[in-house]
Amino acid sequence: MQDALALLTVPVAAVPRNRNQVRRLVVAPAMRAGELDTARIFLERLVEANPSSSDDLLTLGSVMMRSGRRDAGQAHIEQAGELDPDNLAIAAVRLQALVQATDFDAARTFACRYAERSPDHARLAQLCLIALTRAGDLDTGLVIVERLQDRVDLTADLALEVAQVLQLAGRHQQALAIGRKALEQGGESPRLHLVVANAMLSLGGDDAEILDHLRQARDKAAKDVLLLRTLGETLLRLRQNEEAVDVLRQASELAPDLRNLKMLLARALRLARRYEGAATLLRKLAQEDPHSPSLQRYTISTLLQAGLKEEAQGHYADLVGRKRAYLTGSFAEALARLDGNLASAPISKGRLDFAWSLASRLAGGEPVDDGKPVDRDSWDNRARWGCLADLLLLDWLECAPERTGEVAAMLDGIDAAVAGIREGLDRGKGALLISPHMGPMYAGPLALHMANIPMKWLASAPKIASFPHVGSLISTSEHSELEVTREVMTSLRQGNAVVIAIDGAMSPSAPRVGWEGRQVTYSQFAAGLVYHLGVPSFITIPYWQERRVKFHVEAMPGKQEGQEFPAFALAYQQAFFEEVERQVLRGPENLRLSGGIWRGIR
Image 1: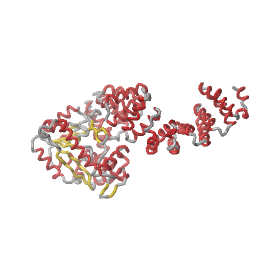
Image 2 (image 1 turned 45 degrees about the vertical axis):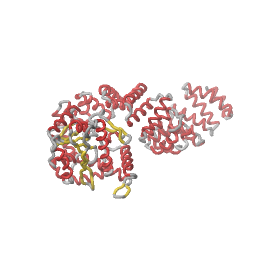
Image 3 (image 1 turned 180 degrees about the horizontal axis):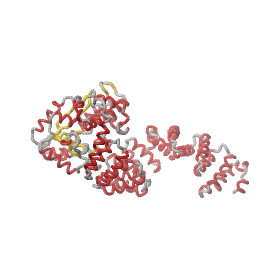
Image 4 (image 1 turned 120 degrees about the horizontal axis):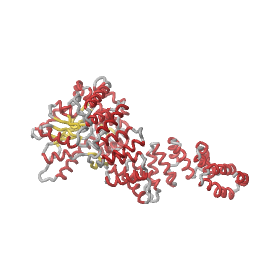
């Protein structure tokens, strides 16, 4: 090598024909053989002789980065790009270096500079989409995607990135079409199978096909944690709980620091009736995060299922004590303080985008308030406030029951709202009071209690002796679906009004229906009781108006003479979602955007 380098003087290397032969006969074979130092030494001589050669600078920079000299290599690549900024191949390597260095702010800036031209170079377009997605710049990513999505010559790697951007934008049908086409054309990436499966999950596709895609992906990427999680969740939806436990345990072992994954594993263990294993896992998680009410409640109900009643009661007492300490001042003052805590609302941007789009469609334009257009930021904040207000309502009723009167003082029009319910109960068959997960939900049972309506209500709260109104609670979190059904039937026979959020989900396998292009949870249980038993039913929806709670109560359809159940169930479902849409138009604070129908909106 030294003899060869001595022959390759700077004047010799400056001759174009000599340079080309050195690249072809020395540099390229050295790179193929992994002899990166040899390749680097000869490239440095070529750059010395041809300092304005962007190709030589680019190759030298790439070799240096491959050999671990990242900073020096990136400097050569940047120099090459500055010499030839219109060379898209060089731009792709420059962007790749930024992405590999996880400098996503710089990568985003660079990708934005080449966004308009990147569709003319597949590798650059792919890297631009990766950089923009990682930086959260979906809008610029969609600019590139719009020029690419109809092309027939997309590489599998580029098709994957296009599909993922479309998926993030909620354009699941387009993402599915591009992903499927790439697979049909020979794409083998496990991520392609995953993006197709996720699009189908969002659209409510065939469960067997979804599972097939996920299993094919696992065969090629058995240690991909995101893939294993999605497979585990899908198995739970299909009630294949034992296999889900195995898959999620593997994922949890690969990523032991992911708490959400452990929570999902605990849920799988519960559904597989391995209550002691679930309790052991949740006990540890609850100790690590004592300030998460949802985790504490889930732990309590699991302990009850495992037969550990005393331990569950201890956990519940601790939970109530911690939450009670935060309930200072009056209920009205606590509501007012929510304005300073809106960022804590557990609502994703995708869910807010969906709700804004729905509200705009129903309003025939952008939402208005008192005839004036509402700007998006204030609309989002009102939606966040409504979510937090309902959670505060639960905390207040549960942890400060002796101060329930402060909440009751904010409820208006109870007598008028329950008049129809009283008439329904007079028929002697009980009554079903259905609702969606919208508005200040927990005001409903309180209003019924104040009106002396005999009632039971279904909720995921644990049935513990110290829980307020525990005698009227049917807990869905510690009983099987069959046991819950029996309790509901018994309560109706006893002449009670039974409150059910029929868009709730006792398990991941809960039934779903199409709504606004998404698959959301919705149970035909109430429709079945009305049809077969003649139980009167009403939809009851609390809502905020000028920060006071009012109630909308409407009789639901009854069975018509000669009407078959499928037709009746469809009419009942349509009536339910019509009321959901009316609630949307009552303002963003009445959406809640958590649980129920919202759980399926990502």
